[in-house]
Image 1 (tube, one colour):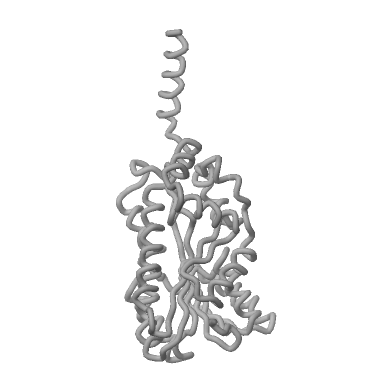
Image 2: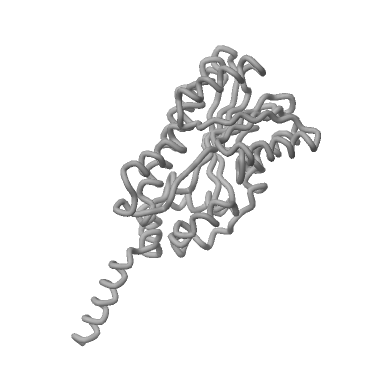
Amino acid sequence: MTQIDGSLALVTGASSGIGAATAKALAIQGAHVLLLARRESALQDVAAHINAKGGKATAYIVDVTDAVAVVKTAQEITDQHGTPDILINNAGFGKWRFVEEITPGEAADMMACPYFAAFNVTHAFLPAMMERGSGKIVCVNSPLGRFIWPGTTAYTAARWALRGFTYALRADLAGSGVSATHYVAGKVDSPYWQTNTASEERFPLIARLIPTITPDAAARGLLRAVRGDAREVVTPFLIKTVFWQHALVPYVVDWLMRVTGYRRPAMEHRSAYHQEEGQGAE
């Protein structure tokens, strides 16, 4: 079990949403939290909130998709505070779109964050964690790291990459004293949906049966992932039950996601045309 009280915990994507809530929760539990994100004003607000409440937080403005910048920041952190005990790879980006709706550059950006962001941060600190013989790494992911539904192609590919990275990393670290956990949170009430309304409307109807959770609820689940040593932690529980169903009857779950999922307008029109054509033939 990972001890949070007195630990040095690093959280990426810490300026809002799950990252900010997790940073605050870790600080309440006694961790010195290192906050990493690109948005300086928002990140400083999170740090100020934690410090005002009697916690301890230090902010670092960095783009974690930039490997060179991450190495530089990692050196600063190591010089100032030592090697983190806990790494939370939470930074994420992406829009739910069909292939033809995005550019190759946008697809690369979605792969960069979360996948390369998690790789860069882990790569920067892992050697020292392994030399010390202890540490916890948690990669925060979406249910789309396992499910497939229409209109999310590049986003889904990046999320599958992050899950593969976490599982492979866990296998690599066996016996080292350092462990990795894949953390899956369902739909979280965050600013993301306010600025990506076109993504929200692409939820399959069946997936909308799963309740939206708050950032604080997601953070509580994440702290369970930090403390334990499970390969995967999922919240809310209803998503985990769907994962079990997917493991047993994957084609059925994939089919439900597909038939209740978002469709291109042209596909909808074509479907309506075929229905009318069929009715006329009767």
